[in-house]
Image (cartoon, rainbow, N blue to C red; front, side):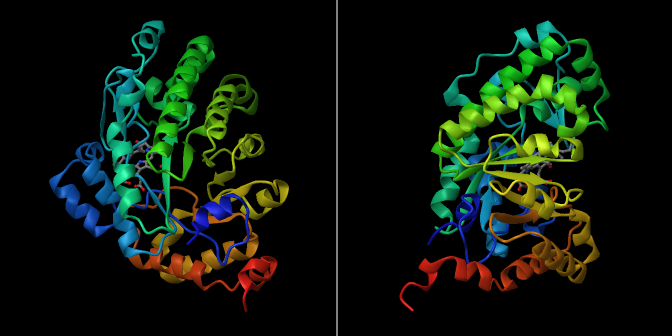
Length: 351
Ligand code: CP3
């Protein structure tokens, strides 16, 4: 059976829209919390067997159309010699603030970039039903640089923004290194079984459009082109960056994924050649299954089914009730799509 999510990335007609949830393997799952009592996040994501087990957890509970490998955007950073811990987000041992910080980055050996992640992908692909897509991912160069320069996730990343203003050439050198490593990493993930990849630019919106174009865009384009040239479908996610959405929608990617602040239907109409992904506010799920179903139906009404992957606008929150996740998936499955079915004559083939 075909993988619904991949057909949607190609903007083909499908029986219904695919649905998956950002951070779907995380802390809202009781079975995950149980495992976390024994192992730290670092231990779980650092071990291929355990990471694969966690990746598959939400698939055992819900009828999702994709699994996303359980890892962090920091997982490939040891290949550059960067040391970090989690508290709960990434904390960098020696933030990069000067030329020395860039010069001491290691030349990565392609075969040792997060081997636990590629191995987890192999285990997952073998275990997953054929119609479920497997997603790889990475952080966008800018979002990774945000942690490496700032040192940890801090509101509005002021040290990072000062660094961009004061040392643009150093930032350029750092982004170049990150873009090259992520290209390599995503290709390795595809070779290990990832059907498509998502690039998370969670901190996309920190700079103005002009600064984004001058400093960040070239490195994001280079990454997207490397991945595209390898034939890997790309989902590009940006968060809290309404002033950059058009600029992102013009980048080479099969799908653009946004947070809940954007009108996804409008975006889809402006860029009919792109698939779109999103974008229910994760906080709505905290309001319970009825509120979730209502919001889901609103989304389905406002976004055309062709080329729409249903998701949240950002990661699912730890206190999300399981019943809300069920309600979201049920709403997507319940959708009647006569228009789509008629649009695809092959589905009526022998009848
Ligand atoms: O949420 C996003 O914006 C997506 C991109 C992103 C990830 N990690 C991907 C991810 C970002 C910005 C991070 C950084 C990070 N890492 C944070 C954010 C907060 C901060 O302080 O900056 C946190 C809390 C971590 C550490 C981390 N990563 C934990 C504790 C976990 C376990 C599960 C959970 O949700 O608690 C993760 C998993 C993780 N990070 C996944 C992804 C895609 C795994 C895939 C999944 O759970 O489906």
